[in-house]
Length: 74
Image 1 (cartoon, one colour):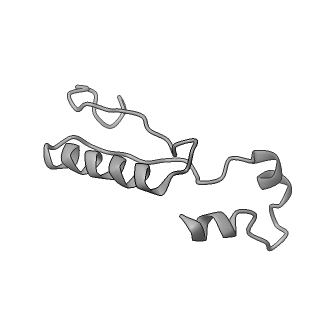
Image 2: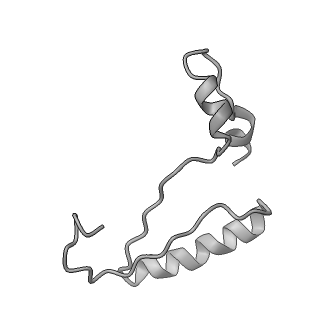
């Protein structure tokens, strides 16, 4: 973030998919983030919904999506 905003005058928080994957809790988290957004706080998301990097790496170029069912669920 220092590269795109050297003054570091925008608050930044890190969040992740909750371990329990509870949809209601994620929705509530989104509601809170929406309030931050309305106050001008930048919200960035990164990463993937899938973290089995071994399977992800070994399934490359096989033509199959290793987390298709989970992404559809999300």
